[in-house]
Amino acid sequence: MTYTEVFDLVDAGDGRWDVQQHGTLLVAGQVCRTRTGFVLWDWLDRQLGTYETIDDALRALIRFEDRSSGATAY
Image 1 (cartoon, rainbow, N blue to C red):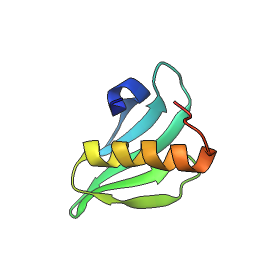
Image 2 (cartoon, rainbow, N blue to C red):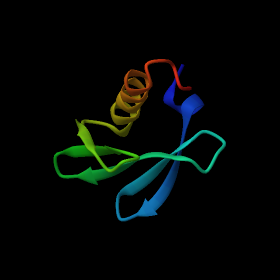
Image 3 (tube, helix red, strand yellow):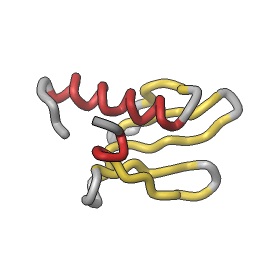
């Protein structure tokens, strides 16, 4: 499964993207481009880490979501 099957990115301006569950308006998190990489937050505004690429950040979000739910949520 790829992140494009799970999430949609919505441009929020100024190097920020809202991450929505694919095909819905449910927000799963947010990604922000910084000098050090892409910072990922979950839907509760908890910072989950900084990643080299947006792809890496979204793959990590899938892992975090799976781990927090105790099951595969997507």
